[in-house]
Image (tube, rainbow, N blue to C red; front, side, top):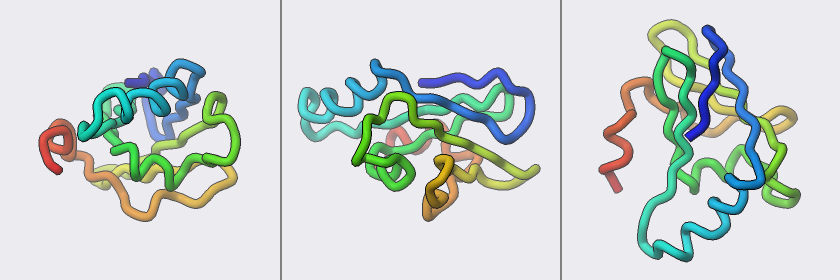
Length: 105
């Protein structure tokens, strides 16, 4: 989980060495489990991204630590996830997806 204290959209998140390690180690340690990155957008809500979708915005050819993820949302809309210099994630993340996404396959 990552938290942004910025009151309004767009929220920015920077991945750390610890998160990079977790994204590399946890899938093999808990085989068959789903891994998510939960981005807490101040008081607006939680943008929960499954690991497979996360790879569509991160540059996996370089170190993940230090990469920035941007989350934006218009009023009554869904979350738009992007990484500076890269395309936006193909699909948006519905505002009401949390916590339902954790229990669906």
